[in-house]
Image 1 (cartoon, helix red, strand yellow):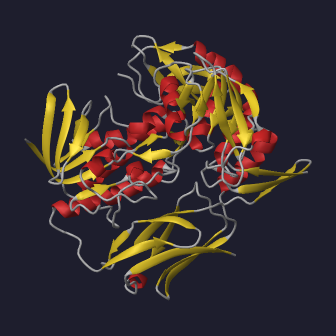
Image 2: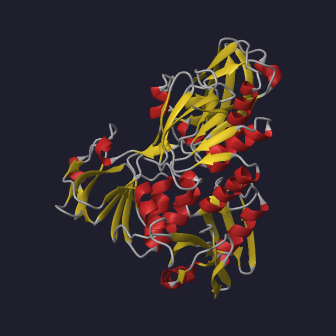
Length: 414
Length: 115
């Protein structure tokens, strides 16, 4: 059985950044496992730009951002097993993986989970109608077009106005398809405002809010969809139904952290984030198992994935070097207007603590309050807040000292 | 004449107000100088960076991702796409290799390494 100090499952932006951070923190025996033929993860198919503005001060495309980190991994001589799929992680941190050499078993001192996400499928969305060809998740269409050079369709409707849906609206338009509409079930878009401008407005693609696809039509190939406005319970309103002819439906209706391995190891998952419950070092409830990137919480910007992965990498390195976190534990809780707070647990130890959160709805000017009982630990004003834009609040070490049992993060409109 | 628009330079998406009086253009709402530049350009000569893919002729099922080195005028986007779609390249390719030279005032360069 192979042994290593730190095993990293996933060689995308999270895995690569975590590996370099662990290495630079002093643990050189690190192995990255990735199921594809090259590192890079989802960035390999994200050929558009906008990556790295915060982290690297440059506006790069996905593959260029991935190359920066792949080069950092190579420069450090970190071992990478590509074309290797991890099948199982057990409670003793033994990894079972497979590649063309057969089955591998690896015993790790620490494991970093960096498996990313998958997309919500048509089946999970329960869209009525027939099952013709021409229905893809937006990411699948992106991969088929950008990596394999196939044009997936000519006349397109997109369900979901998150960033993937918006990016694909532009991509399809650039390749000569007619994008008839982007439908969004919520009364607001989930994507970045800049994408509404450069993906929809630039191409005169209509965005229909509070609208869903109620039915799919077509026998062998998609022929059209029935769209409808939805009521307060997000159910289609019969009188608003209308038919849009199309041959392609792209579904951009949610990313789900890929935690099969995590649950297989008996590690607790947070029902709101769908990722593991972690402390400020990104250590899960299983000692020596850390998580970062989209597998932990779905991110908007890869820059913040890299930051989070550095935390996990350093945390795993400290763990391997015998510096185990110990101290009073405080739990975090989402209060008014906040959907979730991460980390869910904090081990008090005289450090500034960064809290990451998402709000429940779009808001204008808000004041965030972080408190423990009646003690206010910090406040912050934001001119606007949206569910699609992760927020960061830092509680200084001297204020953290006053935290007991539970910290609540809440907002009020001001 | 006043125009309200959203800056797209970085994910902050600041709401800009651009005031155009003849030759005088002023911008407010920007959090950084790039936003001011964007506001002025967007109202006088809007440009965009274009990203796409080019087929790699000597590799199976392989595409190389590309981008315009500098933004081009919005009016030229679809003409540029015609040029990109007609192009084929051979591996090996390095990031930054020129795929199409001298197109609409800029170059189209590779954003991915293909061995």
